[in-house]
Length: 294
Image (cartoon, rainbow, N blue to C red):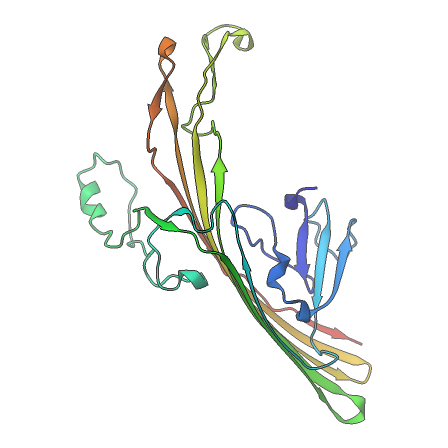
């Protein structure tokens, strides 16, 4: 089944999607050295969150590692559609690669919704002192994935022990999605009912047009993730304290050139350089599950 029907969890806590508009989690942001086990379930049990219809994937991380470890992983990726090719984006700040805003994307406070015919409209627009709406042409870089993981175990008296395991991950991707045709929103579809006032609407003659509303979506995504687990084992009792943090920054620019008005026998009137759709999302979920085992 599609990713929207699946749920990812870590140590019993549902994980947020690493994509802004899809229910999808990229497991490559979890270092393999931090993984103790992976459990995949197709049916729900009483201890699970019932938010899935396809599969439930739970990653269980280490708190007291069996042996000390230190791992550093560097990775890169190449996309033949976007890498080293033209890429549209908003004005970037100094920390966009890490997914954090340095103030470049700040909007003025206290804005009021109003029509452009309102005399205060242009006065209010003067409050925009940052370059919030200009589109810039640049070149997409290769994707990158940096991971650092560290784990230590310390022995105590009477075969007791305590330890910790932590990791820090930084991932950046710049992708381009080609849009061959779209007929949603203000964009017209390639068919048109010539008599929409007819009593039987479904019997109205249909006119076909040979045009496409084409364009592309450019997505700049940065994910920063960290986790730190502590564990203490005293005889048959084990206590664990787990923390995870994820910061997701998604900047998507969509530009489409196409048609927005039918013009009878002539066909359609083109609408070139239709206003670009800009979407920016920032999420910073944090989880702190505590567990004890006796």
